[in-house]
Length: 92
Image 1 (cartoon, helix red, strand yellow):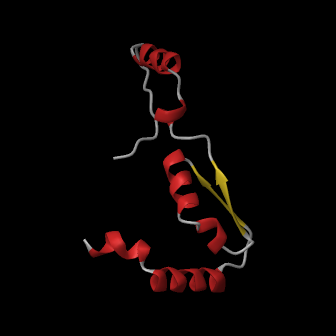
Image 2 (cartoon, one colour):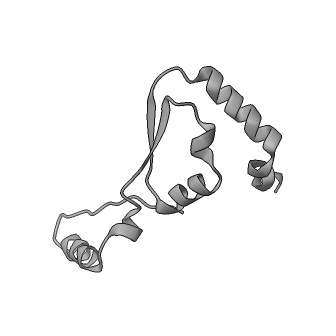
Image 3 (cartoon, one colour):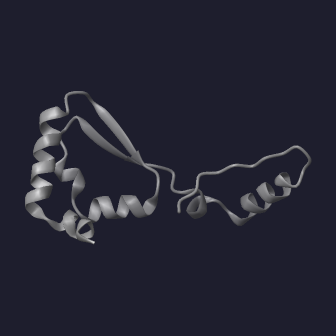
């Protein structure tokens, strides 16, 4: 389970930051979809480690967190219609 603690390895993190700085030449915008991801990114100061050309955007949140009960009930009702398939993003 060594990999679990690697994100706390300052030397490894700084090597990764240096590599990102070397290869990052274009403007990039990355959206984190999950609020939990946004919280972790901020908690560990990741935005301060990235070059100016990489911007992080907070997304709408995962479907479980941002969907109202009414919306979910409506989707379930629609899924019961003939020839209807409802799909959504999911994490394991």
